[in-house]
Amino acid sequence: MAITFQLPFPIAIGASTRIANLIGCGLPDAAKVTAMVAMVAATVVGLLNTTLLASLTSFIPSLFTQDVEVLDAAAKALPVCAVLQIFDALASNLNGILRGLGRQAIGGYVGLIAFYIVGLPISFGMGFGLELGLPGLWAGPVIGLAVVSVVEAGFIWCTSWQRACEDATQRDLQEGFVDE
Image (tube, rainbow, N blue to C red; front, side):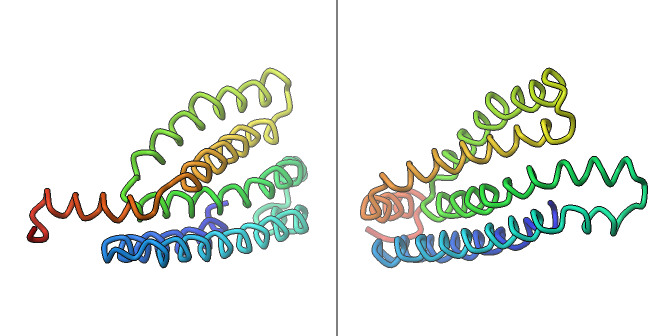
């Protein structure tokens, strides 16, 4: 899981930087196109990661151990982890877009609620309450990332990109970065 995150995260960093530059230059349409391109790239990477993990559920664990119990547990958990990949890529890039818009606090609040109020209880309930074990524990982060993706996508969908440019100019004036 840590390795697969290394593909969508750099896309988010690039998108964040590019969107921030375009917003700061007062180019909302170009920033919006950059956001769309980043989301297409994130979707492609997420689907690639999903496909790899879903199709290699027996092979990947065998690279690390030959213990039959561990192999069995990993093979059961990897399909759930495969589903997580698409939401992980989307959430990563949506957070990058929010950073570029100067609205990183929204990602923080959404993540806090999605993981601690939604995801964590689901993990405990499915993993221990329903006795689904490792796949049940992974269900919480999957659902948490899905919530993050939907809420942040909704926020970005409703964002006025022109207003984001105006807000950036206002922040620059307040910080003394530009003259009036």
